Length: 269
Length: 269
Image (cartoon, rainbow over all chains, first blue to last red; front, top):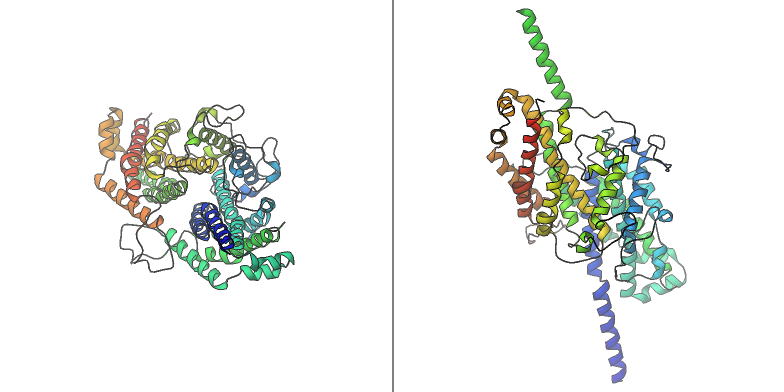
């Protein structure tokens, strides 16, 4: 009896140490909250420029040895450059063009290996790309053309990477939730029951709170700060706070749950 | 007499139209104020990562056909890529490695030509680079190494570009001041009197106000925003507001005035 208790204690302590060293619910939550600021900063910076349609026009620019728009050129070239500098060695990063990536030229860094290996194959950047350009972008940039297509594409890339990192962080969310209560998930995983998993991962009240928080953040981070009396000034925000709330409600949180479900479905492989 | 008056009226109207179309003091001030937010966003994002010293170590990484640190690699490759996409056609942009830039592959965009042509040759990026890495960076990032060198270098590049754009905007500041009162500057310009020009460009009270404003911005934009009662929480900022105030007082504003003086010295060439 004493031995059994001892073994259980050792297992619990080991498990807690592993969680503390690698991944805890607090760390995951802190990262998600911090990433909200990054996403809002990126949107605010992209909104400095108008739409700048030529950046997305396949026939506008012609780069040697490349077929596509200026935006595609900047994204693919940047990803290739960052890949050689080791960006995608970090399991938090997912490339938009994984087929075109050169290998890293920097010594490997020992990122904590906390995810199930099957997590690597989950990449939702195709739907993130489509959502960003077809639905989100027209909601928060003005019509017009200021000629700064390279800066615009660089800002788009920053937005895409911030959204991608946030949504694929669902792998870490799912891992920490699974570790916290594996028995709750095992039945649904073995039954490959996506709906049951989605139900287990959905907390309506938490989602409402996140939408309210990011809306407030967009107001605070997107305001005009001056030395005058703040009470007098009209509220003008660099990005419409309701768009940020919708971005989370309609796309970021649903896409994150999709990542979580796909991750959990492979968690016992 | 009537003809003289008419000619004077036409000249004044034309001059005002040119200013309205291209450059006004209000537009310049708005841009400078908006760039403060960009600089603070960039510092906040860089501060997500610790110092990450290997990114600056010449012997750490080895890229084919390139000699230098990972940071230098990312900056030079990014500048080259953005140059082919037309970034440096905009007179507001100044490259850090102007000798290594390929030409643009995009159709030329008609940026308003408001600067004297001699402005193109003014590039203070060497002192901006040295200031950023040797003095500023250690003031606002933590010691440590999280392995994200590619992201870190990309954040550094964003900071460098935002600082460079702001400081070289001194050319536009000088141009609008000169147009507003050319006679005030002509004597000092013809005498090549740097000190007299510096005196004409220095408004101590305005500089104090800017330092206070950016400190306040760093508090607002770098705070932890939550849905709770804001009065209760301890003030914790993502970047020390006094560092941002110092960045403006010790470096950005003095460097901008240096750009202004050099621009004015060539304004009558």
